[in-house]
Length: 171
Image 1 (cartoon, rainbow, N blue to C red):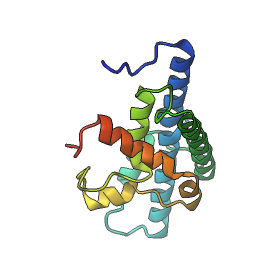
Image 2: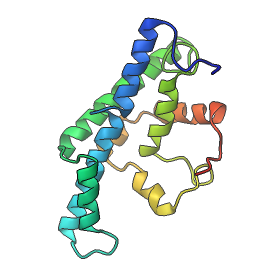
Image 3: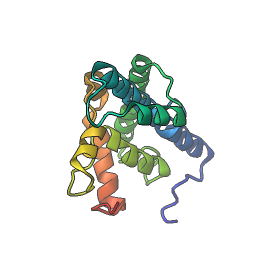
């Protein structure tokens, strides 16, 4: 495809796959966000086991399927560390005149971040029509994570969607 989403340069290619792993791989951002989601859901069930809409059996099934077993406090620290790294990378690139994670053109890392950034703050409902409940579920509320979510992360997501991806999304 044009542009090439995987850099030809070996160092840039390795960097890109490393960034993607930090965003989407084991012990990356998405992985740890999932651990926090399950921890919050379990806490809600313990606090109010008879609350409508909270189904312990379904949660246990999902937790088993998606390998929940993590420490939410550690997951939070890991997300903050990943965000700090991504923020530093984008600021360094911006200082060099680039709007991308690597080099001066779009790579798969930019697209991965644009997609996974929905776990911080989903796109507005008019651009990504999902149920208000789903939108609310995906909106980050943790103060430590939000403090690490420098505005450059959302600005990067918005730029990638506006310039390269179809909006509004059709789900």
